[in-house]
Structure formats: structure tokens, C-alpha cells
Length: 432
Image 1 (cartoon, rainbow, N blue to C red):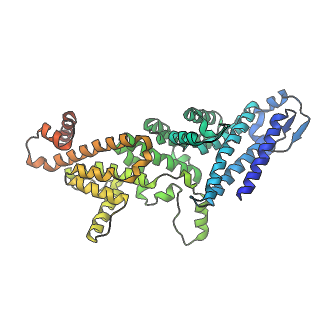
Image 2 (cartoon, rainbow, N blue to C red):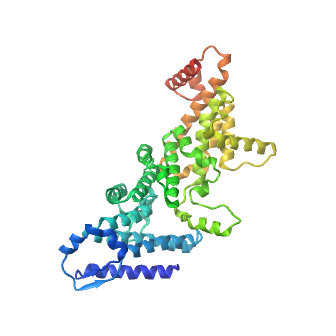
Image 3 (cartoon, rainbow, N blue to C red):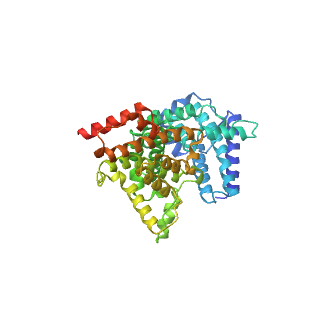
């Protein structure tokens, strides 16, 4: 659909809606789709409304859903960095503004089923936008009306209100969508526990269509990033290990497709892709998983060389390490996230935690964490120190009868209480 056609359709629909607002004597005589959604719920309301002299056969909800779908299709048909893509993206604000006005109209009619479908349109367009991005858009906006969605000061409260509406009046599929949208937003802002508690409500057996599966995968991936942000390395591995093991992360998150011989199948998969501005940073997802796996595997391998032979959650990490060692033999240059983490793992195995952390710290993926970058790296540094200390103690345990807590504290840059806790863990493991 050409952008000019979309703009013309939007203008006509907006004009029609304004006419409806300005003329209370006008009303829509809606079609079967929306009429069936209203059912008995709004029939009493219609009886209470004043008799109108003008009725139009029209369905605002259907028109808005079509505009929403064609806006997404229009963005998919353009290059992500082109001027035309940006023009399509700018129309998102106009669509959301109209959707809210139409939602208020149906609220006055007490039509909750249509409100639910409009709420899902709003949630779909708002859930992945970080508050810092909204603030940046407000600061750079030249708008005089301030009606755009990014001028909403309490976006968290707005999304929670929309989700509550869906939970109260939606069907099972609609409730699952609202839950996954909320999980993604909580995780995006680092609220791991809130996101996890919501996420456990969704079962994979409830995912009846491809779109739900995509949003489930995105929510799970973002939950893994939130766990990393909070320092829960084991939770990161649990969230991301299955995705990483498939070697199809881009396809699972609907951000790319594999080249196939069957062009019709490939075209069907292209239709499922998300617009570029909704994409997650795949390098960050991969880095968070690999680093978390490194922090778990390096100390465990130092303790028992073959302890993780059957641990499926570490299979992808071990493959990365094997590929790195093979590329070292062939003298192939190293410049990817995998290579940086593999080098950091080797340094950590050698006991050089400082060099290991520097390799991780200098990766470019951390800029995605925006304002929390320093906090994330500080927490990561502590985790690397602890993993280095654990690996050292497990390796040297057969050769020492005792350790100096003060010396270990100085060597690994940890306070003495932390060193004592690590040694206590080693002692408990040894007694098992």
C-alpha cells in the first residue's frame, strides 16, 4: 500500500470521526463483525441514547485495524534506513492518537469488546518503547498540540490500565497477548521479578498462532536480558539456552529468515517479520547468554573437567569455545561477540580476571542499556571476580591446606566477606 493512499485513508477516517463527534445526531449503524462483538452488552445503551436522524453503515474498528496492518506492511516494504521508512514510522503517532479518540468514543457507548481490540492496538505499538526514548522524543519534538503518545508522562500507568481492560473483558488469546506485552515492558526497564511473575502465567500450549509465539519468544529473550541486568546469571542461561541452541535466533525473534529453495515458503516467513524499529539487539542477547554461561562453566570445569558433559544449557557455549580454538589454530581474525567472550573465558581460566573483564567491558553492545550501563558493568565486574576466585580455588585446592583471605581479597579485588562466602561454598561442595 502506497504511503499516499494510507494518508488519504487516514484523513478520510479522521474526518468521518470528527463529523461524528461534532454532530450528536449522527451515529454508525455498524456491520456484523462489530455488532456481534457488542451483543447484549450495548443494546441497553442504544435504547438509552437519543433517537438519531442520520445513520451511516460504517465500522470504525475495522477501519482502524486495517490502517494498523497496512502501516506495518508499509514499513516492511521499505529499507530500514530509508527516508520513506521514517515517513511511515511518523504516521504511527497519528494512528495512536486516532485510536485513543475512537476508544474514548466506544467507552461512552460502554462497548468493552471493541475497547479491548483497540487496547491491543495501543499495547502493540507502545510496549517496546523505553521511557528514556520517549523522553528524548519529547525533548526534540516541535509539536504544539502535545497530543502525540510520547507526551504521556505516565506510560507505565497507561499500559497497566490498558492491560487491566484486556484482562477484565478479553478472551484467552487477547489476555495472553496483553500479558506478553507487559512482560516485555517490565523486562525492558529492568524489572525482572515483575516480568518473571507475569511470564509464568503463560504456557506454550496456549500459543495457538505464529504471532503469539513470536511475542512469547521476544518476551523470553527480553526477560533474559533483564536477568543479566540484575546479575542473575543462572536465570539468563535458563531463559536463553534453548533459543541459542537452535542457531536460529534471528528467525525465532522474527527479525530475519533463512534462505530457502522454496521461494513461496520464504515469502510466507517474510510476512511474519517485525518492522526494523521493533528489532532486539541480537548481539546483546548472544553476549548476555555467553557471558552468563562463561561465569558458570569456567569455575565448574575447574572443579571437575567433565562435569558439564551432559548439560544441554551449555552446549552452545561449548561449541563457541571449540570454534574459537579451531580458528586460533588457523589464525583467523577475531572480531565478533563470540570471539570476545571466548577470549575472556580463556583469560579467566588462566586466572587473569582483569584482562577477562576488560575484554568484556570494551564490547560495544553495552550501549543498549542506556542509563544503566555503569551499573551493569559494575555488577559484571564483581561476577567475573567471583568466578575467577572460584576457578582459582578449585584448581589449586589439591595443593593447599589453607588460604589467606586477606591475600585472596587483594589479588581478586573482593572484600573479605565475599571471599569468605566463596571459600565457604567450596568447602560445602567438597563435603558433598
